[in-house]
Length: 172
Length: 419
Image (tube, rainbow over all chains, first blue to last red; front, side, top):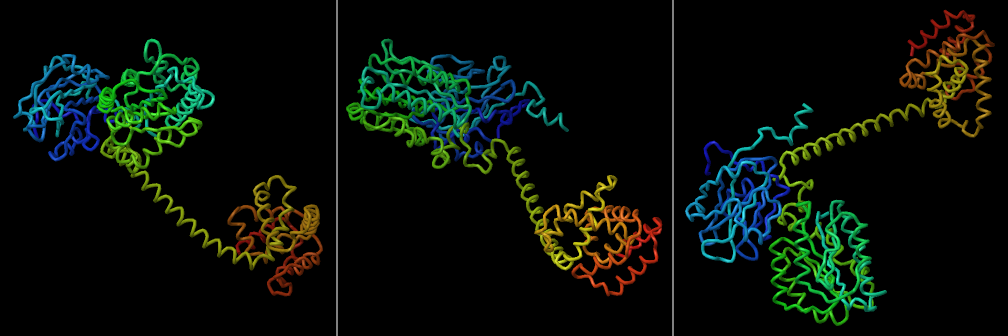
């Protein structure tokens, strides 16, 4: 598994109940690509439904600094080739995602996507991230569906104290 | 209990003046919308309902953004006037926009469209917008009504639905004319959607964004989402089960003991009478509260045990008073009465340890009395043999003790110890 020095995998800080993925196929939902365990299994992947686009909205339980991300696809033809990342936008639809530049646009290398190498983000632009929206616009061979087997976000939490456990700490 | 935001698209074209649904199509829709809004907000307090009119001079218009406030929905339904013709494509797009900007992102999105007039749009355009709905995770329920309109639209709406449907979350309902719109809708998936999801949609719940789903998990919590909570729930469940097990065990033991105790009661039922009889004498003495508290129970036992039940309260009281008087006069009173009563009194002693002693203390405070009366009482009691050696011994002992208080009490304590 790929790791980035000095940064941690932010999977534990994801606010699961609010994750939303648009245009996901009901048979192959987002959990396959995002959750621990599921995402490490290349046989389980997230697939788009109507067309090749996917829109993942991932909120965090606290502010984080985002350093890099991994987008991994199972096969080259269906793997995502271009992506846009939006920061702290709660309601990005496909229309906005296509029209706007986003916080950062990514053109992905097929090797990186197949091997799951982390792609660095412009660190200065990802300093106070409460939620991140990843828009996947296309795949490498213009297939009708895009498949994403793994997405990992690397970064550091802004606060080392998890305020959700504040109550617990007070009681003990 | 799906958490969702709903936008109801009301057809308010000129066709709605028609009275084939009583009183008019528009009124019938208003009633159905009211019911629907009530059902939606009732199924989950965080559900919101908005209203949009599909027709109008300036095209579709949002009359109420999704709100949990039923009043707003009812109010804007009153404001709708029939005018113009419907444009479903535009209306659905606007509704989708209204849903996209819902405040609670955890809500699923749903559009309920009432269509009662012929659609001017091409099928292609409808399918395109339906695909967009599907792409954006918006479910749509279509209510098609009206005589000609339903027939003309059937094909278009069918393909619209097929394009928009994912996971069977969207439905098309056709309501025949001459019926009551809201009544028919009540039994359709448009209203029943929630309970429907509970059953058939269980599989869909997990995949449908994870926000609303979760019926298919043991405690309604996805153990993957929140392992700690799931663990806590499971542990608490185990504890509760263990507790119930223990309670059941205890109950069974008590039952067994109770059976044993009842057997004893049966034997001693006669003797209880005297035990109970000795009680009322304690009443006048305020310091013996504990004893008084214990008496009702003893009295009840007694009444259950023998045939005194028929006696009125007054009679019982009188008899009790007379007896207590007699007993207190007989310095033998407490002792002689108590002595043969071993099973009954010991049981009471278990309940209120101090009670018997105190009573006897009270009894001992009285003057001497004819021994003959004590003997008479004893002989009247079933299960007590006056000729019994022990009883005789006690009686003779009582004869000798001429009520010096101290010695009486000592004697009583001796009695207690004997027991």
